[in-house]
Length: 243
Image (tube, rainbow, N blue to C red; front, side):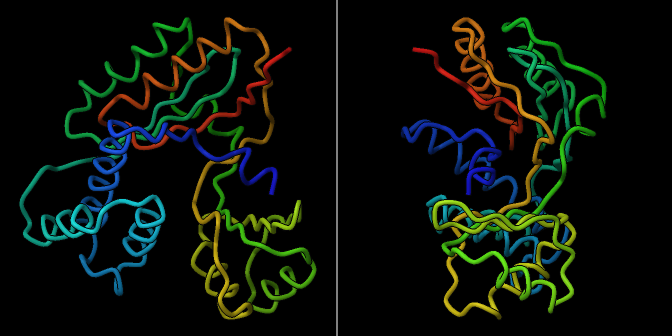
């Protein structure tokens, strides 16, 4: 499952402070999806997917429940999505997805990590065309042909199926997420998804080998993830430590 894990968004260190930030970000995302649709995950499939992802990341039940109750009550903040793109350390390409109730504050917060690491924030669309917006589903297995057949029988538009080290990775257009997941659950009883997300997969990767670039890249990612409004960071960097 090399590519599936390779392309995953940067994950925060498992510290108490980082965990609080993860819970906060999930709470905000659940609130927005519940408020913009139905606050019932059995009706709102997007909400169901986010809740499942939150549980896998060990977000406490009370955080999930409070976000849904807040949305159902009709009160609270009015968040809107914002996306920023640019070039990070080592000339890697970066997409930053946010939820904000104050765009002016958010752009200042997001611009700072670029400025502090000699990086460049760009115009909308400057790097997004070099990423594919895909559903990625990963699970244990070693037979890609059986998986591909099950997906094709369910008329799922599959982008790719890979097998590596006893792991199967399914890549499909993001619009096929629910169809692909349902087809796999029906074809393989008791399937356990180790990777289950809609993400941006880079078409090309950039190796970062210079020590200064590596240090700057770590600083850059940490600064972005410290921004309260940042939900996800996607990039095409592969850090390669030499020696």
